Amino acid sequence: MSDENASMYFEIHKKETGDSEVRIKTMRRMKEKEYLRRIMDSVKTPILKDRYLFVYNNQYFTLDVFRNLELCLLEVEPTEENSKISLPSELVILDDVTDNADYRNFRLFEQINQKGKEKLISKHKKSSRSRT
Image 1 (cartoon, one colour):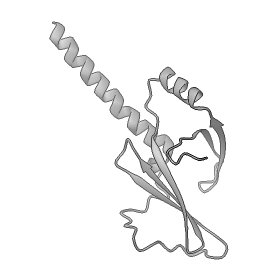
Image 2: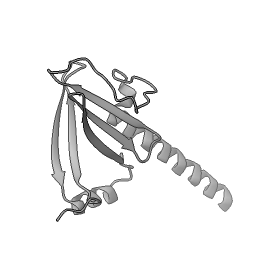
Image 3: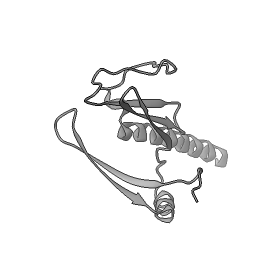
């Protein structure tokens, strides 16, 4: 019996290799309890995204839809059978961010948490003024 609304949690570590096209990625599945404990222990907001995987024209696609950013990212893995990238006509591509480091998960994480930090600072300043 499977639950289509079930969630899985992963801890992912990425290490740069010096080659801009190669990174070492390790992934470990986490239990929900461990995930929630880590979130509660941290003041940082995690990246929340839904990931969709599909195959089109002998190519593997990963579509990440971010819940806490107005952003969707599509990653294409061409295969040996089809090294030329072709996209489904239903997709609208706004920008190619392939080599843009601002769209890596680490930078997106920083962006999410900077916004949260600014909100906390603003909230603190407002509450400080009201006490004086």
